[in-house]
Image 1 (cartoon, rainbow, N blue to C red):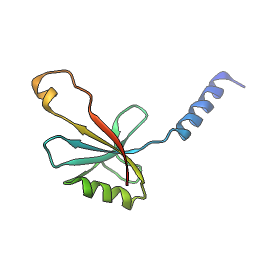
Image 2 (tube, rainbow, N blue to C red; image 1 turned 90 degrees about the vertical axis):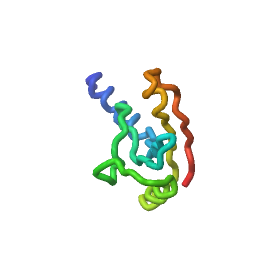
Image 3 (cartoon, one colour; image 1 turned 135 degrees about the horizontal axis):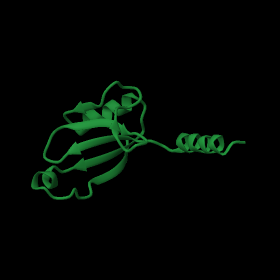
Length: 100
């Protein structure tokens, strides 16, 4: 078997077993919550069922939306615009996995 074919097969198996969580991103001091997921290149993108990243005015609305798509687990991330506004390197964001 060609080594490239073998490597490709292993990569496909790894991506199939990797569990992707939907993600809710909340911005500190804001009432907007973005709902999407992280792709293989670490980009925040829309859920596979959607055509765009969704925005909600409350965490409860975002969670209900994910429940309607039969998700049971979500990664919640809060980001702060403070570091960026002050020209500082981005500090670690608060992340938590929650069960819906």
